Image 1 (cartoon, chains in turn orange, blue):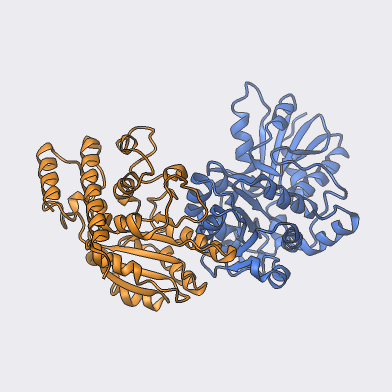
Image 2: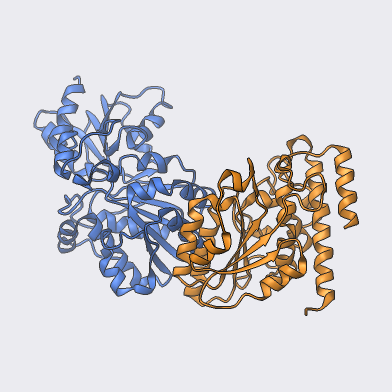
Length: 276
Length: 322
């Protein structure tokens, strides 16, 4: 069992991030933000940034750093909150989110000095890039690992499965994908839009090591990441999540895929998240 | 870099564009430690057979998955490797277009793409395999540099210049075996600076790829009829060397010649610049008409569309008014 203090720290970090997600989403007003997709992957990103990854905010381009690529670019709010929380940039910069001409647009734009590895938002591209980074590390004998966060809807994209085949062919055990399995996508329930069947069997049959986790339980995620072994195959963590997690009126309600908050909704969301 | 000697020039001509690409990369591997070459299951067909055997640790076959190949190329380029990604130009430019836009245009990873067998080189394979829109597509991507060498010597120059350039580059290879020879000896090659191969006061023929040689021959034919044409090798389509057009404004005609659709390629690039000038001569677009036609052998295809010295000269006679 891991020290409880570590898990307590991660829980506190993920809570700070959740609150910032709501504050940021509220301040952009009627432009709206991808709120529920960020709440869905918040704890995954918190555990990665707070514990799993080797990062140095003082030197965001250090060659030894682990790479994190957010394939589901619409989870940007959680990434920005994590980068701020771990000291890559200030709270002042964080609150430039979605400002005209700013560095933190709705979908991430590559900015290594801020710790943003790639531009994303066009689904299905980041895992390929992650494969290339992992392949380069193998070639050059670098020890860092590459983590790519995918949405389950994103897995509709054919390129995901091109990469799934290829990464196992090249035995990239330094590549870890995390699927934020919330069962929802832009138009509604994934099972109704494009039923992808059994994710565990799919990834496994493509040659990946599969680990499942509760994507909102810090301890479960912590254990999943620490269970990854160098087995000459890439690993995917299937993180079972709830879209809009933590805010009662957002959970599994797809109108919060991209939306704006009224002042009443804002207060309610904050109070619910504060109480957790 | 390989010498532009008369012996080498003859060898490259015999090898054709793909074999010459293979020679260029093989040569580069000896000096470029971080070189990697990617293919989408067309390594042998792209002239990389020897490279694959000699440098298995620098060669990655991504299988028949062009989109993933460009993404992987991006990741490797991001980590500082010198990355070439190659396959037939139609699959490269079209199947992976969005990956090119994101990774090379938006994020500016300095991948060097090589689209082989472009134009009609795939001959009897037909329209699925022709590369007649790749210049239009690549031109539309911000931050992209688009190169189209005229012969074997220029392929060698282009590959080496692209490595030095260290920016996103698409190299378009036209022409099959027994490539016509434009450059017999060494010359100065610079990305973005066209080469004037022949002077002429009546008109300027701006050509690219295989059409450079045909245009030179067409100009000889025109000269026999007292028409003097300047012939320019526009090996860089983007950024375009607009000084060529500035020099041609007092002439009677500008002709663009390309083994590519008349939509959006070299002709389009020249026309876009020409419209910004207060006065400029009319432009004759010589290229592939905006249609899918029947398939045929490479030589037959070029003749069918008038992409030969004779065809080019005849089109110019039709339009040219003294």
